[in-house]
Length: 179
Ligand code: IMP
Ligand code: MG
Image (cartoon, rainbow, N blue to C red; front, side, top):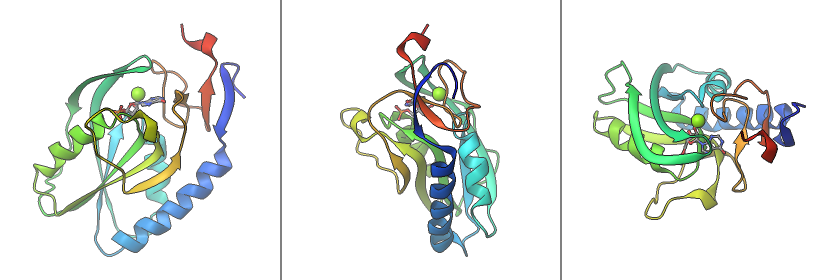
């Protein structure tokens, strides 16, 4: 285990097993729809790479980059840094996200993608912190890997100031690791 990690919350095996299950769920709902899976960069990239390989049918890939976090705090000001390239008019779109916390980022991305005239839009998130939702945000994910407590986690794509994304598990940082 990495020296800055206090506790492994989700092991590689737990994540792998759950992704296989989510892949089956998505296959049942989208197997004949040629969905567009939209990856929210950068945090979702590890989950995305595993998730699309657990979906055994035609699908297309798109990427969108947003920013809102600084350190361990959501700024609430969501910005699109890089938009999707494909025309999403009439397409069945599934957003793949690393974590749903305040819900502000996903609320913003959903509104943005809906305005492109998609046929349907759903959210698949690896992690959900239900206690983190900002006041007034009612958005929920359609597919959730794991519900987790309100702690700051890193690994498997999730960062603290860009570090720890490459840990193969999801863990809780030691307090002394926050510079
Ligand atoms: P939201 O807009 O507050 O729901 O934030 C979602 C985004 O914040 C995620 O895509 C992550 O990049 C980041 N985030 C939220 N919670 C955590 C965490 O515990 N660790 C690392 N990043 C997080
Ligand atoms: Mg982040």
